[in-house]
Image (cartoon, rainbow, N blue to C red; front, side, top):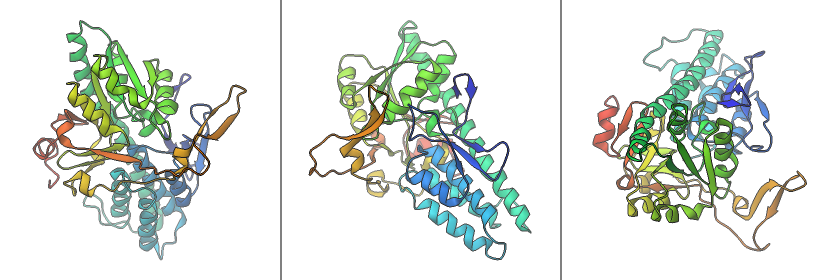
Length: 376
C-alpha cells in the first residue's frame, strides 16, 4: 500500500535493527501516521489487545513476530517452556480471529522441533534465526495470499462491470478488511484495488462500522490513499441502498470461518447478509486460508465472540474543528452498554468465499474441494 507515494506494509522488521518490530499505530489513524516499535512479546500482546494492530491477518502476523521477540529474550535452558508460555500469552489477547492461534502454534512447532518440514534446531542462535525466518515467512505469505484474493475477486467484479456495460460497480463493505487489516493488499478490499488498478470503474459504500468506526477511520482513509471512489454511510443505510438497486455486491472479510462456511466478522455483518439475501445482492466473504478453523462445524455454537469494553459504545473519538483529537460521551452518564465485537453469518447467506486458491462455495464440500489437505 502506498501512503503519499511511499510503500508500507502494516508490520515489518526495523531496517537498522532486526531485533525491533515496527507497526503502524492504527489508534491514531486517520489523523496521524505514527510508527511504533515493539521490543518484546509483552509489547506485541499490548498491540493486539489494545488494537494498535487489528484485522485477522495482521493479528496473526503480529503474533508470529511476537514469538520471534520471545525467542530473542528467553534463555536456552528454558527455551521450549518459555516459547510455549509466550504462545499462550499471545493467544489470550483476543479470542475470535483464528489467524492469531494459527500463527502462534505454527511458530511453536518450528521452534520446538515439532514441525514436519524442518529439522530440529540445535542451538539458541539457530532457534532465533529460525524464529525470524518463520515470522517473516508468515507475513510474506499473508501478503501473497491477499494479492491472490484480489486476482480471483477481480474476475467477479469484471463480470458485473460487463453486465453494466462497464458502468461503475457499487460495492458495499463493512468494517476494515483492507490493507490495514493484513500485512498488505487486504482481503475484502484486495479485489477492489485490483479492479481499480485494471481500470474497471468501482465505487465503494463504506459502512462507518460502530462502535470503533473502522470503516470511517480506516477503510475510507486507505481507499482515499489509493484513489478509489467511495462514500461513507451510516451502518443502517446498507439495506436502503440495496432496496433501491444501488449495491451490486457486498464483500466483507472474516475473522474465523468454520469448515462448513459459517463466517464470523465485525458486528453488523450478519444484518448486511440478510439484506443482501432479501434483495438478491451477491454477498461474498474474502479470506486467506489461515482464517479457516477446520476444527469447527457450527459457527453460531462454536465460534467465541469477543465482548469488549463498553466504553467503546459510550464514547467516540474524533477531531474537533480546532484540530484537537478528543473523546466525548454520546449517552447519559449513568447509561450502561454492552459491546459484542463480532457476529456470525451462516453459510446459507454467503454467495461464495474468495480465497487465495479461488472462489468456492460456502460449504464443507466447496471448502474441501479447494483445501483437500485439511481433514474437514
